Amino acid sequence: GSQDQTERVYQDFYKTQAPSNTIEFRLIRLRHNVGKGAAVQTGMLAARGAFCLMVDADGATSFGSGLEAVAAYAATHDFILGSRADLDPSSSASTTTQRSPLRRLLQMGFHLLVVCLVGNSEVQDTQCGFKLFRGPTVVPLLFSRLHLRRWAFDTELLYRATGVHLRLKEVTVPWHEVEGSKLNTGPLALARVAIGMLRDMMCVRLCYFLRIWKLPSLKGQQERDKDK
Figure 1 (spheres, rainbow, N blue to C red):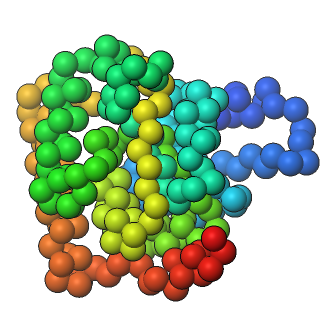
Figure 2: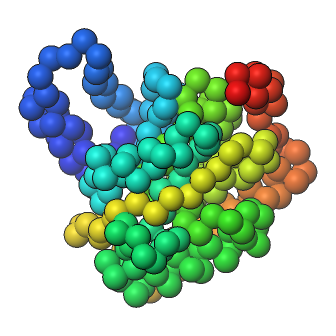
C-alpha cells in the first residue's frame, strides 16, 4: 500500500539474483496503505525459516553488517533488537556520531516514554528497523494478534515479548542516516507524530492492563522451552 519506491527497488534487486533452490524471493502487496505495523505483520506471518529478519528498506543498516552484529546471539535468544544506541561505545558499530541531534533527542524522549508506559527499562532503542526473531514459535506468538498498525507497533511487540518472558537481547548495529527519511522535522509534524505515538503507547498499557487485549498464549512458549 506504500506509494514510495520500495517495490521498484525490490524488483531491481531481484533481477540481479541468480536462480537458487535454497532462496525464495516473495513480494507481498497490500491493496491499501494500512500502516507500517500492519505491513510488517503481514510479511512476518508469511515468512518461513528458522529465523525471520525485519529490516528497513532504506538500507540504513545493511543485511550483512547487521547480521554479523547479531549472529553471536541468535542461538541463545528469541528476539534480538538491533539498536542505534551506543550500548558499547568502544564498538565499531557505534552510531552516535552519525545521528543528528534532533534524532538523538527524540530517541531519548521516546525511551523515557517506553519505560513509563510499556515498563521495559532495559531496551534503549525500540524503533530501530533491524530485528531478528526465532521463526517457528516466536513470530506467531508476537505477530498473530498485534493491534498497533502504525509507527508505534514496535512498542507493542516489546510489551508482548516482555509479558511472556522471551529471551531478549539488544545489540548495537552499524547504522547511518539515509537522506530522504519520511520523518518530517517541522515542529507541527513532530508534535503530531509525538502525540500519536504517545496515544498508541498509552493504549497498549491500558488495553493490556484491562485485558481488552490479551498477551499471547504460553503454549508456544512452553513448547519452545521443551526444545531447549
